[in-house]
Amino acid sequence: MVGVSELLLVQRADSGIWLYPTGWADVGYSPAEVAVKEVREETGVDCEPERVLAVIDGQRMGFSRFGMYMVVFLCRAIGGELERHPLECRDVGWFGPDDLPAATAGAGWWAPMAFAAINGEDFPTRFDEVRSPIWRD
Image (cartoon, rainbow, N blue to C red; front, side, top):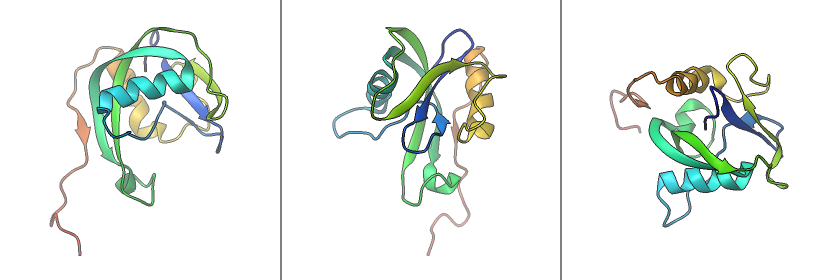
């Protein structure tokens, strides 16, 4: 989610961790629709997806003990008012590359990519490498 060279982050109510807006994909919604819905729900901001930055297996990244995929979008803010969801978020805000909160989850892998995309850099969509052998026992 982008402002003027800034990322829109939420502070999760359950853990206090900061992260880009996230959510589970509901049946019948495309990944882009889920992104728009979750950003609006958690932050009050209306957005428009521009491109997919990454498709990552959360279990392989160590974010989850069960299988889930993260589809990370670059989105442009197009309206709304910044307002946190009262149950899901402790706080919301816009942050530049030098002022990310200390407790920002996984920023080492996604923040450089996100800020590069905000700055108009062109790079391929990131995804997990194919393992050899592919099949696990």
